[in-house]
Length: 387
Image 1 (tube, helix red, strand yellow):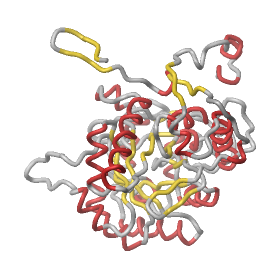
Image 2 (cartoon, helix red, strand yellow; image 1 turned 135 degrees about the horizontal axis):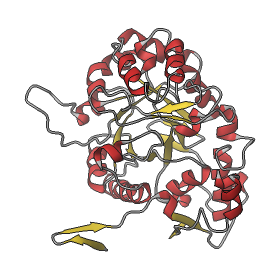
Image 3 (tube, one colour; image 1 turned 120 degrees about the vertical axis):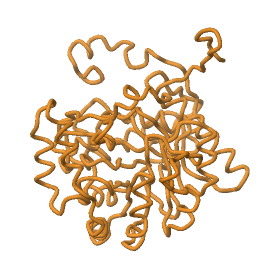
Image 4 (spheres, helix red, strand yellow; image 1 turned 90 degrees about the horizontal axis):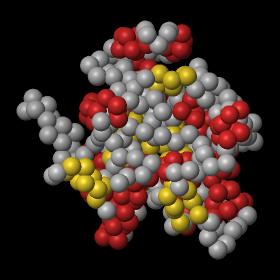
């Protein structure tokens, strides 16, 4: 129901992940019976979790490690890995400066030109080591580097921007990326994002998207919501976009996965996104905490180094465990940030959901007190959920 903001302006109530909870149904099942498999194009994965294309999260080593554990990692085609032959000293500099010097340093480091030969090299390194080569670029980067990426043999291509749509207006001097043509011409599945509405999701699927990313501004290091004032809380955004997916499937017989991107910290967050309709999730900061992550315990967003309007910051997430601990356990922490797959399977068992499709159908309730009710001691002592 619309709420009147003032004369002539009404608004719809939207919900974030922290405002909802999942209600058990009439049955439960052993977590070992929960099937978490999902598919993007012709690629099937055991774990519906993707590591974000952020320079503090995914490099060649992380992409390969995630692939071997049953998940996916996406490498940023416009980041440190494709600007510098040896990114290690650059990453050391990013981790070493104070917060006051950080923005200027990032703008300086990301002014280094992207080298097409390094795009080829990184993709081939991932594939030679047995990983799935998933890559990401902005629409402008996709126009510029799509061909070299295809020739290098990438397995998945993510076209990502703060907001992407099929109805983009540009100055006469700029030819915008035709998303439908790009999806048709590329030899691998192309995923498009980000968006938060039913209509845009439907249009992106009609354009040929193999998957749609949902989320504007919820990421841990993102400041777009503060800088631009733009965004829709994730629970509502996912539900709206999932409705478009279901309608598109009814119309065409093609099932296009919806991926919740950003703002997810714990296993419970992932479970709630899937219950709202997501097929999988894309996360950054939880993986930035892995000992194998390139960020040295720091995490920053893709729009952080913008030369004119930075829309991200660097946050310290610390290193809390190995990639394997974080993704599949065994957990060394009790706050839901380790063994994300175990959390999903256990939640599915508790809710009686045998697979992702059944998980999408579980009951959701509005529960703003879910994370605080009865947690006085945890909060006071900064333990568990009170950290």
